[in-house]
Length: 245
Image 1 (cartoon, helix red, strand yellow):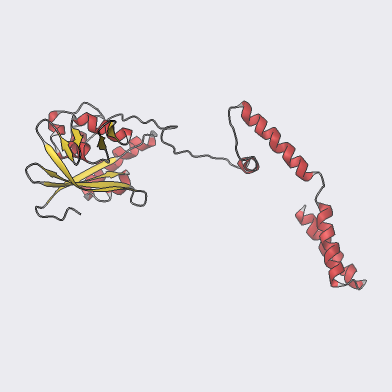
Image 2 (tube, rainbow, N blue to C red; image 1 turned 45 degrees about the horizontal axis):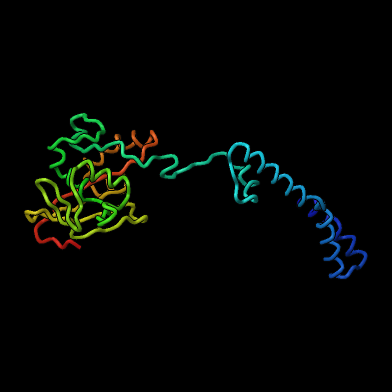
């Protein structure tokens, strides 16, 4: 309709100039052409179509809170969702360390004492934002609670305690969307310092050695291609006297 009205307006300009119409009269008549080109019933027709579309969607349990978006939705061919708790579950299937991968291990929640005592086990128990509340107990993200639960350790203030080990959190850097990771610095009861980071695999692997990236890339790609939510953990021991901030 816009093309047609534009064509008619251009075709009308020359005759009006030949008939010595004033500029204001010419503009008014051109606007009239554009107005006539739009059917008077068009707005009401669009409203009726929107209501009909909303009713059809409602029959399929699809409810739209913004009717004007229905027209736009009709042009969409592909929709991609990423929402924890709807397409993904707040449930941890298990974990797998680099050492376990080398031994062709599988994702599991049943960790051996060797794994729990390793750097990976320490990362599971320490790299989180969980806090202990006197009345509510452990408060924080559900997945982090499961990770801590697998290690059998407990959070008490700034300390993470196990049957034969104790760590103190010296610094916590919360998760940032820009960095896609969070990190902590902890001190073992013997004075050893450790740095742990947890976040999206691509960001965490970027901090690792080339060998580690190569070993983990294929495995992570396989998990993500199946629709799993994958988190990566990495850590290292810090030199004595390192600034924990």
